[in-house]
Amino acid sequence: MKITSYGAAEEVTGSKHLIEVNGNRILLDCGLFQGRRIEADQKNRQNSLDMQKIDCIVLSHAHIDHSGLLPLFDKKGYNGPIYTTPATRDLCSIMLMDSAHIQQKDAEWLSKKQLTFIPPLYTSDDVHEIMKHFISVPYEMRMPIGNDVFLTFHDAGHVLGSAMVELEYREMGKWKHFIFSGDIGRKNMPILADPWEPKPCDVMIMESTYGDRDHGDMVQMDNKLEEIINEAVENGGKIIVPSFALERTQEFIYTLHRLQSQNRIPDIPVFVDSPLTVNITEVFRLHIESFDEEFKKQFRENGNPFDLKRIRYIRSQTESIELNQLQEPAIIISASGMCEYGRILHHLRNNISDPRNTILIIGFQAEYTLGRKIVERQPRVRILGVMLELRARVRVMNEFSAHAGRSELIEFGSHYSNTDTQVFLVHGEPKAMQALYSGLKEKDVKNLSILKFCQPVEI
Image (cartoon, rainbow, N blue to C red):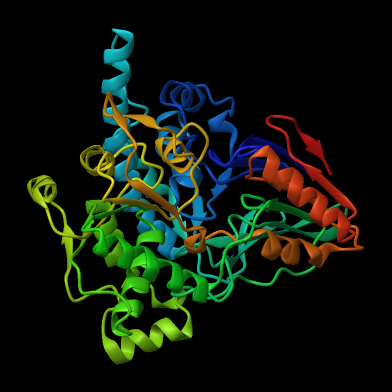
């Protein structure tokens, strides 16, 4: 077996890992690199993978940093299958179309910036074509995908439809097991079932996003959000929540639902201003197989947990613009989660300089993104070409993270303490990866290393 990482090696976007075994070339994930716009565009266009020589793609989940380069692969001649779970397939049909729209807008910006025409990375037509390649495989179904290679998906508990990938392959007459963790979810979180407990294997590729820090539990999450909302209402301000359309927004709304039902927060209007989020929330209703028992019970007994007393799901641009006139306290949830594009930019531009308001960050913010600059509380930030003073309160809640924290990652990796399993770390910034590496070494994970970008590893 040979492993080569073409993305998410010592970084957290652009997940792509090529597995070569038994003459099969299998790509795990096909993610878009996200970051500085010009650098990101160059990285995505100049990908060194020979797309026509890949036999199949196995997709762990629908987040764009794991799936967003798929339409470009079709454009460049990829003609093989894409294996993923049913929920991920449904989500990709929505999220990749949204990504195509963003590629168009980015191309217009780059063309203006560089005074020459730059075509979009891909278009909606490319999305239509790549969706024809999807093959849905339910959790725990063993599926042949190549010469002496079998695939099984296990629930990763990260986002709707997310999966850990198990490959069984025969090498030199012996059957072996390979596991790719994808993004590992957290235990005891609302909505989704807990992540699968890993079993013995020969090779493991493991994420490390939060390898250097832990998250608070649900009790802390509820208490902290209650405090933030009540403080903002008392100050007469709005709460602006940049949120990822998949999972994070649904978890946030479900938490609001819980606090409202316990009369812990006032009855203030909540606006979900993201057509993508509205569509994704509809997909959630179709995939009850991914929910935990508590959420299923809520659905049966109390109806849709995503409906609040005063919630309004907004699709039209006109309704979105009308939110600029709001004077009373309200919660505005909008994409994108890292504040790089979408309607959230307009809400930040209109509210970031008012000290009564609160910017509530509930997700990971990659380097160089606007979201990271807000978390760092830089005194002035550029939004839609205008420099603005950051005078609003900034509150950060990592409790909403869908990623396992340091302790949970160490617990996961410790399944391979004192074994011969070769464990490779991916999907983390260098500081987090080194911290997790040290933590796993202390747990006697012997054969441990960090995958480097485009540096093949022979097993």
